[in-house]
Length: 416
Image: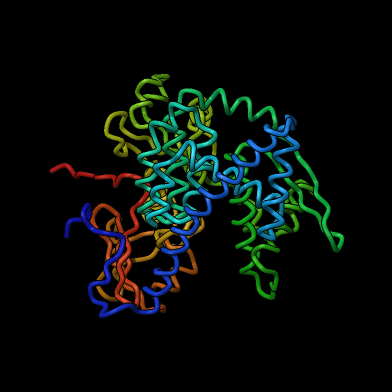
């Protein structure tokens, strides 16, 4: 089978529409109607502005508020939702007509269209014009979550030259805020660099999992994670935790073009900026700092031209842990269709079960989150893994879905 020519799913084996086909049929109509609504909302917006101008009402913010209020009242939605609909309509009609056309023929869903606008609106005009065609292509092929991640990555790669400057400006806005809610509870918000946020979350999760395994523990993982963060922030240590939970530290993978470590930013531009697992691109200066020997970071170096792996720090670990880390690095996320759970929080699954002759190798393993791991083994689905890491899922109805790993497959050759 030629993967490049394979559609997202096949239903040749189905005779007549089944229950899934009927749902898809309605979803197609919803996309068509969503495109029609977008056009009509924008027409309403333009008409309202024109009428206000004709009557001498030049206070545009006030007029805009009135239009938003009327739309919200007519559709029985909040003004915030109406504002989002107005913004989406203006963007699709006037800046992304290719996306609107795709939505109108049900090539993408309304959620895809919203994600496209969200990710492209913050980019420069040059980047938007360069990526819109590719964005529509991705939206017509990928699930919403995967589409959003890949488009965000494309935007970051095209704006890699200004990433460090934009990150520095954003860093100045770091802060902590508290939001009180009902029942004597509150949200504690940290607006901090994504790298640190991921490390904080991963360490708390790792400690929480150790606590969850203790005899008599009844708290959920979410409750344990919240309690762990309170212990760390209030007491400053984890002495109240079992000994095997105290030494847990964050462990995050950072992938860097090899030449960038030598200060050669031109070499890094060939394959994009440095990337942190589960987060995305980061400034090269930050990547060099993380690769300087800090504990808790798995440094993955890539070839400056091909992007193939040069090192995954294999001599730091025994083979089984190193293989798990390499499998997770390649996939970046759970390898189930549309799942966005980071690979670091997933289980490593044998595509061909061990008891059925499957090997513990890069070519037969992939990260699956707990829920999709259970579905794979007990939900009537079957998996087939190709040499490049792509996984084909076959549903109980016979439909097939292809999920590609985020990164290239490393190739190791042994000397004769």
